[in-house]
Length: 204
Length: 143
Image: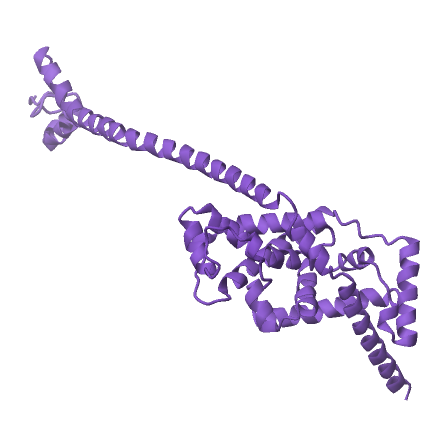
């Protein structure tokens, strides 16, 4: 979790106050306590948002949505240990991202169908270079292109891949984060990786 | 031999595709600067507060509407119960009142259908044959 600078902290709160204490204060109607929680954890939410969405305005929307959901769910929060608020907020954020991925796919907002000829050639070259030299650094793929490709995957496959490969979480941790069983996560991770390979094979 | 070569090639392909998949996912990764910029976006918290307040207002209005409905129902329940009791009592008293009114007007109370069964068998046969009870068909006389 990112450390917050002292300058960002509201003056009236002692520095060592825990998340659980802030939650109790926020539940009691203390607005500055919720502000403090936001300031402490906004970077975590932003990082998770960028795992799934490439554009800043999308990520800002995820940050807003996640904190609003967290605010209205504060009564359901059961504290306990040092990391529990972070885990709880991460669960809300991942769920928000997943909902947004599904919404985007349902509405066909991503316009992925279609890589332009240039993009397809770029990707093809990138793959050829990679297969020839094994130099992964040489394959400079723009994020936009990566987004276009990843958007072809099902939202749950994409969610699993991002958590597994980028967040480097274990099956058990993903299971806890998503609320899916470990067997389901395992099965989906196999399917997701297979799906991505199939997708890339088309450009070889 | 050919199968073995093909399997080997597929394995190499898979390995290469796995590496490329990882690269693709990493290409999607945002830099720290981007993450910080989005997190520290101006007015982000202000926008959150505004949306929370709007949602709270909406919930309060919804709660208000439900409360108004419940209050209405609470008031309606005793009135409905009273009306039901009045209706029940009227239903029970109706035959008594009707009988009382008829008696007061000097009318005969209606014959009850059970009276039919109080005729004897002879009376019934005689009535069906249009004769006085005890009278025979040929007048009951002897030549």
